[in-house]
Image (tube, rainbow over all chains, first blue to last red; front, side):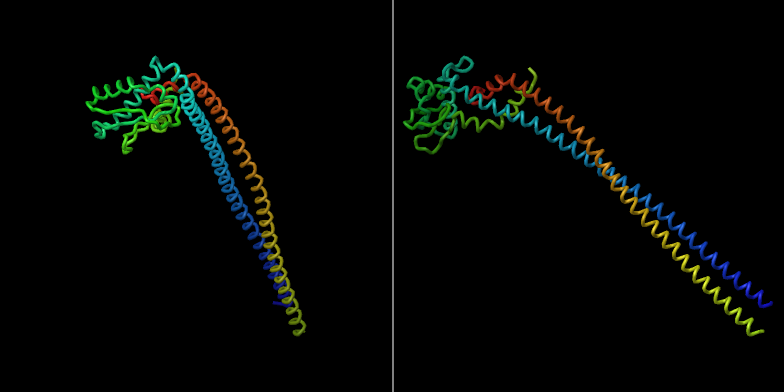
Length: 216
Length: 105
């Protein structure tokens, strides 16, 4: 092999190697770019899916909040109207005292509350006990001896218990009703309107709701 | 003659080495350019993702607002009806409370 041939061979091999290296680099760069594109697209797809989920969750959160607010609104109307029924009932007491309730005069109603309180005390074994009645100034004016006798007679007939009732000199502040107390102060039953309301309001709510919101 | 031939061969070999060095440098530049392209592409996609996220958030937020508004309108209408029903039944409810308070029930 002559010198020129050797020279040409070296040049040719160097060129081939050059082209190979450049071609390989280009191929690698292309492959790298394609893989990166695929990965970026995949990440973008996942990102969009995650954002969609977040969006749906946010929308559902807004709807849940609105539904909760709607329930609260309904509850507020119920509470407002229940409260109104109680308030109106207390306001109505003046009329009840003046005109009675459902044909029953107030003294009869008051006698019923006294009898109920006295019987509760009697149920605890207070045969022959002396009970005193504490009322408001206004309600005390409805009490007289015949009324007290009528009540004690009724208790004797109904329960077979002898009690003595008298009007206490102590007056209470109340829209109506009575506090029945054993004279020794050991037992007391409050049948004032306010106490009865506090006692029965929870149990009465369901019936009030049915009455208020049930269609006529 | 032989000495000159060897010198020529060495020179050509040297050129060949330089050529290969150039090839290595070019290959490195090609790969670096690809990395730069990937970086640019990634940045572009991140910007696009921000825009898409804002669009998606806005779309669902508006849908949520619309549905919430409908729910509240219906609830207000229902509350109004409930109140009207309750007002018309108030007298009966007051009587119910009074019956219990007065010991008639």
